[in-house]
Amino acid sequence: MTKPSATLKVPSWVKRLGQLPEQITQEALAESRDYLRDAARHNATKGGARGLRVRSGRLLRSIRTYLKAKPNGGELSLGMVFYGWVHDTGMTIRGKNGGYLRFRTPDGSWHQVRQVVLPERRWARDALDDTRKQFPRYLHRALERATRPG
Image (cartoon, rainbow, N blue to C red):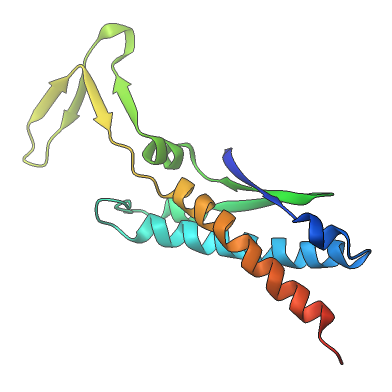
């Protein structure tokens, strides 16, 4: 399931350089894609108040990055299992047809509630925001590599 995305735009001064910007943009987008994947995995495993408490590893294995190149930059998307977005945005889970949710507690007894509130734990959107901030740096490095003599 793919949800949020980061639109990365190439500055106008880079476009004026001619044919070179397309190659530079692709290199910078590829680096940004790797950064997004690594940042999302790091944020998912960091624990604490801002991270998730990963138990099975299914969420980490499901994290995927998608790159859609566009003439003026590109769009990076982050995909994962559904409950990854639930943790990222927060959600209230209610029983079907106005009923109760039943679950077993750690001591073995059963507990009944009308709803369970999962708090927002921004980890995927934080990774997308960080990637948006890092893109100009990757673009500058790709431009330096392309214009380096030799």
